[in-house]
Length: 439
Image (cartoon, rainbow, N blue to C red; front, top):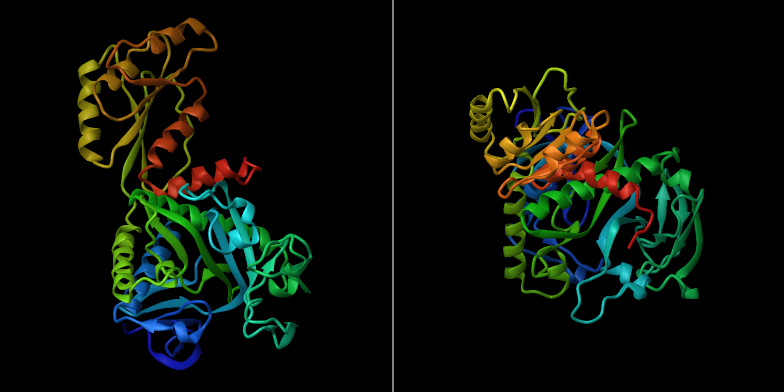
């Protein structure tokens, strides 16, 4: 593209190169290589011809979904099969890992979470977030200052025991926490790693959770389980904290309904390179429509102008529609409007019907649509007996009854979240913040 021209090579890693953009020094060009690596050991590095293309496609579609979800990223746009453009960042030297299941190094540090043979892995109701220092050849150097040194290859990328402490205690990443050898006898100041702003930690934790959740919601629609994932952060020239680097099939563990691995873990486990290449292609195809949020309707329907509408937040992909039509007095008109909704929203929707005495609207709608219908008895506080007209339903009238507006809205959003990963992220994040238990 005309807006991008490679300048000098800024950095080169195991799987990508980062180039200066001659046309805009505030942006960089990230170019993928066809290398796949394992165990931080060069002798395990291999190549397959579609690796860079699959990884670039995956990263770009993932970042586009994150942008729609309101998650700040350095990503700008895809510029070729092997390249994308991003804002220039100063990287925070952390690997941020979110876990839904107990796998990998987590089990080595916490063997008590190992599942019995033949049983599924331990599932965390609330995501477990962990931070690791991103060390290189046994050192952590920031701004020319060596903060950590002398780590062995096995000790590289040490775990931060408690990230919310001002001084971080570093631990061996792959042996049990209670083992005396796990303590690396090294500490580092949180503020220095976070580039001068300790308050960034709370934001990092929130972004980690929301990033995982929106991808978990998207992959679940494809019948895949996101097991865990790693992301990295950077600071833009304007001082904004963003998700940076890449998020591709090297960044997570991803399994299908039969627990078959489709990520880089398959390569680590020794699968044939041809099978690994096939799986990278499958994942690249899976994420192709991630940025395309399906259009769904949340219909707020009352029988009278006197019935106040519930308040609903604005959500990408969800169109709020308000209707005031009496089920008793304009039954045929109600059914005509119902047909229009079903025609206009093939992605489906949910109807919240809020009416007072002798609720005819909710049951009529529920009888004539496959969309879920939730009824709110508007006059319940003043006339409790009115609830019975919406509670005792005959057969083939599948209507839910919820008295409180906010609960009815949350119930509707939970239903719509099955097809909307951004809404899934919002709802699940709110739910998990209420849960102090992590398993």
